[in-house]
Each structure stands twice: as structure tokens, then as C-alpha cells.
Image (tube, rainbow, N blue to C red; front, top):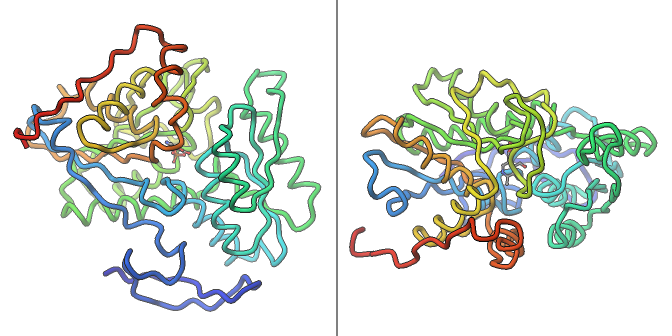
Length: 355
Ligand SMILES: Cc1ncc(COP(=O)(O)O)c(C=O)c1O
């Protein structure tokens, strides 16, 4: 049982008294109260031949389906408590995926209007999820003329909307410390579950909220944990030039304010194909259907496993679930179209007797 602070809600009001309730995942005060406390699952099969152990933090267990539920809830909760959002207000944010869905969920709960600025790369499924939560979808159809990137074009549109819509608020997930702060809790959960015995933490990076929040927790508590960031090949977070990437989630074409590269003890870059291979390995060995960045993390561990000390405990933070990637990563046609013969199906006949 965890003790946590929640806000009570009455319909159509925003500010509410803070009370303390005991909550478990089984009995919750409301849906947002089920964010966090995600399971840690030992990956015995994938790393059966390794002399270290690996646990996966399954962030797909959050109600909106990803780790972005945590910052989405925190940025809105903070803005409400600071009076930056008032009843009838409008939230505007740029996201083509999980943060948008997380915010759509939170805004629906607090009766706030949400405009999610997307681009043509946003999948039809994500658009439908956003709409199902009641969000308004605002499509930017042309990339930024200077950089050729959609991200800059989306941010320009968010600025325009938030400057012209009265009583609007832009959480700005790329620079809002409440994004990172939400992941103090992620790291606290991991640390407490494993009795402070985490040698390596692998997390994917984009806004760098997860990295920054976990790293700050590690430093503030003087933990021995080394944080290894998993970035996309073609992302600029740790230097280099932007390049085309197909799999969304991790990586960025700009360096956000929350990105403080030295917070990572090391960074590992993964290709789209690494992500696909990692996802297929994860589902065939562990029966975990996860999203692209999770596959990237699995491949990253494989790349660096020779550097992991014997007897270590590793945690991989797996950001989301695989259902949102059925038409890409888990589609044979899509993989063949983009990667031809480079991709080999993993062996699915895992020998359970070895467990
Ligand atoms: C699937 C997925 N993986 C990784 C990340 C990176 O997380 P962060 O923005 O905290 O760096 C995101 C962020 O949206 C994501 O959606």
C-alpha cells in the first residue's frame, strides 16, 4: 500500500482540497490515481546467458498506456495549483504520440479543453485515441522551412495558438521541469523495489524528462546507479546532425532545455532496425509486446553487455506497449518495405525448460 496525496474532484470544478488517501492499484480514488506504481518484471529469458540480471519497468501499465502519463499528470497538476490554468481553460501542446494521449486523458478528467498539435507522421490510431478522449487535433501539414523538420513547425503552431486563444496554457514538455520531476517517482519506485541495489538504469531519451528526473533522484540520494541513455541514430541530443528516423518515441531533432547530457553516464545510439529486432526479441522470449523505444533499449543492452559488471542488477524502463505499432514494427509488410532482407525473424521456439 502506498500513501499518496491526491486532489478530490467535484464535476466542473478544478481547484479542490488536498487530502491523503491510501491507494493501491486495485482500489483507486480515480483513474489518474492509477498512474505510477508500475510493475518491475525480471527478464529471465532474454538475458539467460548473461552474468547480470535485468528487470523491466513496464510503463505500459499506466492507464493511458505509457510513461508519459506521469509528466502529463504532473504538468497539469502543477499548473492548476499555481493558478496557471483556470476553469474553462485550454491546454495546447505539440505531440504526435504518448504525451498527447497522456494530456488528453488528464484534460478530459479535469474538464479542460485540449488542442494537440500533430503532424502527418502521427498515426491514425493515435489520432483516434486523442479524439476519443475529446481532444481537438490540429494538423501541421508542412515542415519548418528552415530545418525541414516537423517538430519546429509544430512548436511554432503551438506558440501561435497559445498566444491567440484566451485562457490557454502551453505546458511545454521540452522545458517544463514538472516533466522531469514526475520521474523522481519512477526512480523512487525502482530504487525502493530493489532495495537501492540498481547498478545500471537504461532509459530512452526524447524530451529527456525521464533521464533528467531519474538522474536527479539518483544524485540527490547518493545512489550508485549508473544511468545509460538510449538515443536514436539521427537524433541530436548528444551531438551530431539530424537524420531521418522512422520509429517515433525516442530521439529528437532539437536539444530541449531538459537535456543536460552529462546527467547520463553514457549514451548508446540505436537504429530503427535495432528497435524492431529488440521488440521482436522481447515478445518472442518474454511475451512482452512493447513499443519501438523499448526494443531500442533491449538492443542497447545487447550492444553494451560486455561492459556490464558481473553480478550487476540492471533496470530497463520500457516506455509503452506494442499495440500502437502493429502497422509498423509488428507488420511484416512494413518491415519488408523499409528494410528488405536486413531483418531476420528471431527464433520463437524458446525452451521454457531452461527457466
Ligand atoms: C515511446 C517513448 N519512448 C521514449 C520517450 C522518451 O521519454 P522522454 O520524453 O521522457 O525523454 C517517449 C517520449 O514521449 C516515448 O513516447
